[in-house]
Length: 312
Image (cartoon, rainbow, N blue to C red; front, side, top):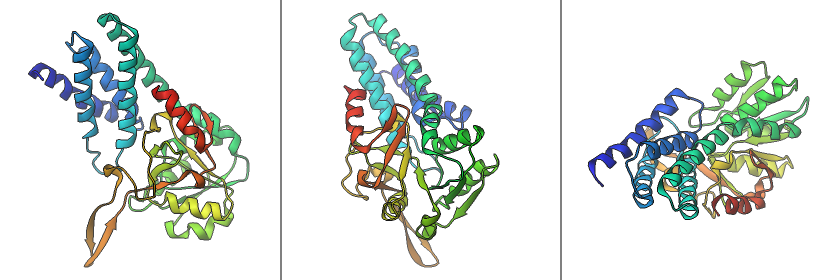
């Protein structure tokens, strides 16, 4: 790759990080699509082949980005890049003129980013029928889309109580408690190990997802699997709120069968003891009730059909 092209690829990461700084609650997928669309605008490529090579190099750079102090976002980032690559291939097959093809890709990228950016608002509307006055909702850790949905319901006049797990090791349940509590929603933090104790108080469980897999199961924050097992045992509905750009072509076979970025990390030493660091787990589809998404409310078994529509 020539130096000028390398500079354009490096600029993708810069634009990606800049967008996230300017939009602290923005989705990684939207930042990636914006950055890749900007690459197409600024590239000096004169053929679709050159453009595809540039985009592939840029996607690899984006997937190497380290989210310092945060859980990995590689699943939704990879899904967004793969979807965009699919758009490029499809457009190239449909349009032979390069300039027209390039403009169409830019238009599609901008539309995709705009649609993805409002997905949480759509999910909040789709979530409303599953919430009612006086119910108690259990939330695991922190999810932007879950908070958006609950805040939207509260603003519409609905009154409910939220129990949120502490969310070790990041303790991000306190972030959920603060966001909801600041808007007048009654919220209590419970220890992760107390989920079984409080489950009988709960009407529904509501979580987000780092990724929605082909099987309809989800990869999410560690502890999601055990919460789902307890919810199923107590016959409580377990709902997952997730944007469609988190649908990924992964097929884990067990709670530990995860992509490297989501897998177990090196153990740390605390008071002479070795402490295992496990950021994520896989929750199989039989533990989930419904997926509340921006493309509708889906059963876990419907995810594979939606993936086919997205990619083919």
